[in-house]
Amino acid sequence: MSEPSKGTDQRDPKTADGVSTITLAAGRAADDASGALDTAARGLEAGRQAAIAASGQVTAAARTAWTAIAQRKLVATGIGAGLTALSAASYAVGRRSSRRPQGPLTRLTGGRI
View 1 (tube, rainbow, N blue to C red):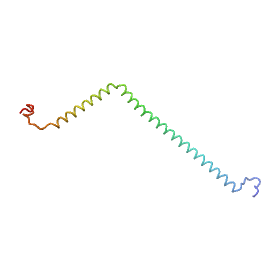
View 2 (cartoon, one colour; view 1 turned 60 degrees about the horizontal axis):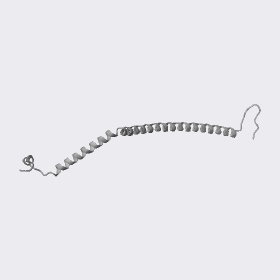
View 3 (spheres, rainbow, N blue to C red; view 1 turned 90 degrees about the horizontal axis):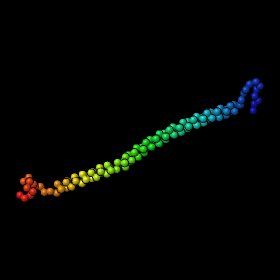
């Protein structure tokens, strides 16, 4: 190697290239780490928002279920009335479809004429 001259700061070109390469690599590593932290922070925020939305949906479902349980007598009455109406309507439709066609006078007299 050559001796450095007195009074001037001269480095070996290979050493200078190595130092600049290490400096650039360290800078890139720091940028990559910063980017990774930003990405992790965004992912954490997205996860937090998803958890809040899911808990809101669970709360709404629980509130609906509790209302149905609290009003169970009204719910049972409504279901019973609906089933009764459905049964009566299907019975009436079935009776009407099984009747033989009759004229107006026969229907009026109940089939005696």
